[in-house]
View (spheres, rainbow, N blue to C red):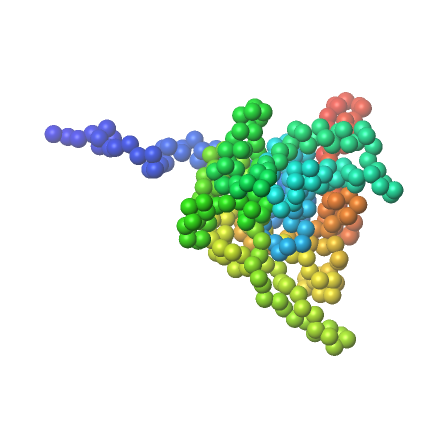
Length: 338
C-alpha cells in the first residue's frame, strides 16, 4: 500500500517551502533588491535608507540633538515619500510642545513670533495642513503607557482616520513600559523587540526607537596649553542598557555624537564644527539598505533643520537635494529632477 506523502503531511504555518515563496523569489530575480526610502541627504542615503516594515534604533547621549535629527528624517519622509507618522515622545513635552517643534522645522523658520524673522499667516496655515495630514502625537499624560497600549493607539488612528500609518516613533524607549509583568530586564527587552519586529513587519510600518546611553567612560586629551580635556566618545551598543540585545534584534542601528570642537577630524584633518553631529551607522540589515560608516550633518538654528556639505563645502539642505523644479512651460510639461 502506497502512501501519498503530500496528502498525509500535516499543515504547519511555521514551515515554508520554496514553492511558497516562488513568486517573491522571481520578483527578486528579475527586479533585484530595492533601497529603502530617502532620509533627505545624499551622504546619509549612501549609508542608510528607511525600509517599510523594518526598524531603526538610534543610540545617543542626552543633549546631542537626537530628536532634532529624528524630526529632520521624519519630515523628509513625510514631504518626499508621503509618510504618515505617529510619535510617542513624552520626554519632549506636551503635544503642544512637540507640534511647535515640528512646525518650526516644517516652516524652516521660528514658529513663535519674534523681532528677527517671522513666518507669514499663509505659511503657518500651510504648515498646519501638512502636519495635519502627516503627523499624530500619542500622549498618555501622567498615565503609564505599555507597549501593547501604544500599538493599539496606532491601530486606532488607522481605523478612525481611515489611513495607513507608515512610521512610528518611540522617543526614548525608557518612557514606554515594556515590562509590565516584571520579568528579568534582558528577557523583557528581548520579548519587546521581537514584538516590535512582528508589528512592524505585519503592518509594513517602520519603527524608530531612541535609546539613551548609560554612564560612559570619559576619554582625555592633552591640550596645547597643558590642560586636559575630558569628553565622551561616540556611543556603541555596549554603552546602552541592554547592550548587545539591540545589536542582535536590530536592523538599522545609528549612533549620534556631538564631538568637541577642540578635536581634529581623523579623516579630514580639520577641527570639528560647533554645530556638527556625527551619525555612525553601526548595523545594516539587509545590506542593500546601506552600509556601515560615518556621516556629518550640521544644524542650522534659525531653520531648526540640518544640512550636509558637498565636495566644495557648500551647504545642502534636504530641499536642495530632493526638491523638484517647477514644470517646464514648453512641452513635455513634466517635473524634471535636478
